[in-house]
Length: 332
Image (cartoon, rainbow, N blue to C red; front, side):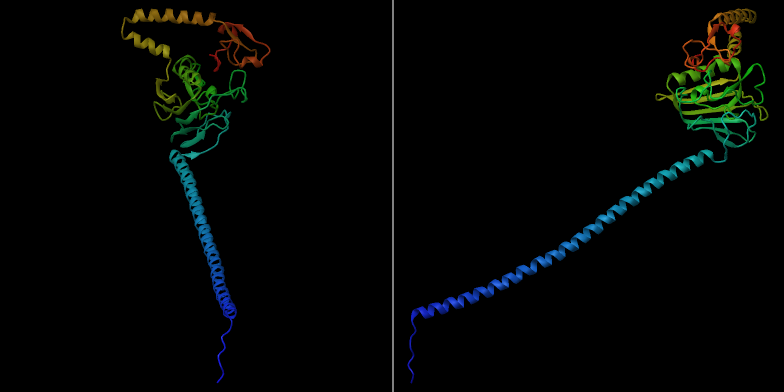
């Protein structure tokens, strides 16, 4: 029987170290594999999350774009609807601003604003001018716009039936100084005194002094369906938040006021007073100094009127001596 020989302690110690190292190496490999697998899984998740985020972002962008398109479409449709509502029942036509024809088409709407202005004039079934509207009245700018020496866009106005009377002017519903043109869709036969010195003139001056106005509406009425001479004007407009309404008949305001006074006192006294006043007013008017140019159509009350600055020859004297009976829209 072979005897068992005990090995030295160093032998067992070395064997233990070899076994321990082998065991540690195996554990290290397992940990390495585990750690290598984790980043791969995370990378996939990141890729998936990124794609999901991009898809969500793209969806949000598409939603925003769709909302913007819907908003723009709604605004456009709203504007179009409003315009269609205003023009409903009327045919939109174009007429040159300086067209001198006095004829008007029935049931039409025409832009009577000079340049880019939008002033809409409407006729009824009889071809009578019955309404003018403008969201904003923009004053004439003679430094940028072509105007004559008398402050007008055109040298003459449309010959609407009735203007041939010596008592009636070719009256603008929207004056040149307020940006209105001179065709038949902005001209009505208007009492000369009313147009030059009465309510019409006062209204135009108020708008000029304010630098313009908004929500402008003019309603024009007639005594019958055959005449083109209005019987009444109604103007509504807004200045600095204040809504103003001007109502007046197409009559000589001096005569109208005289008739009102005649109801309060003796007719003879009033008639004498009116005669004296008219004579006095005519005397003062004829003696007042005015300015004009040889070829101009209008007289000016101030020598420094911007429309006079273009002329080399400026004459001065009374209205009677000037031979001009049409006051300048800008300085009168």
